[in-house]
Length: 253
Image (cartoon, rainbow, N blue to C red; front, side, top):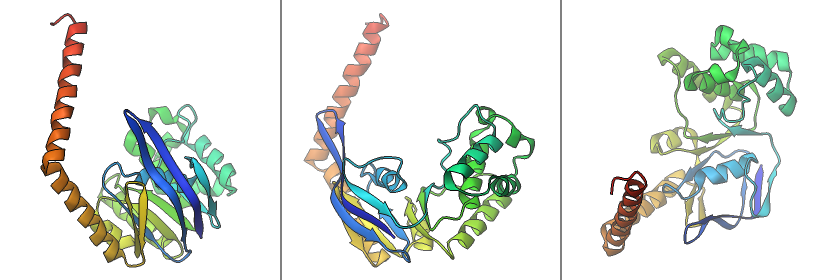
């Protein structure tokens, strides 16, 4: 179970403040897999990172009564000058799992071969993604956090990854961000819609999807109306001014 108690988060932006969450209190029960829905920029990834613990709320607290994963496949925490194997041992110590067992699992799963003993800085983005996904699958979590489940590797590796992930979910839950409604339907059974710092929670995933699609429709209508046209004109003016300034610095005008 994950509890959010009066959680608020905002970021300063040019001309004001962007509110991601405003006093959110809710509980994600143990037996539910939650879809996070919202238009681009609503704060879905920020909320997911707060649940993971990598971003702190401005106010309130998040209580995790279960083992929660880092965002699935996230490779940003690997130390680039350490080898893949050294990174695995470090992660194992953090999560209190057997380092040798984790290393053996990831070595077999990620299919990196001799590169596992090379510094992560020489890895391609696909290799880092394999390593990160392997770590995620090699540690038993009660709740997996997923920010856009992407496929890496060839067809066989993608199939293997999907099969392993689905086996994990027979005993675990997921909190998922995805632009693919089909993917959310595959893995989730309830939904949360994030809009302008406010959250609506639905026990029925289809109701959450319907609400999200209504928000998207209203957004498209606003963009096509006078306010939307005015915003686009203002953005075009700003872009033109920036272009003129760059040209002036280069001695072009």
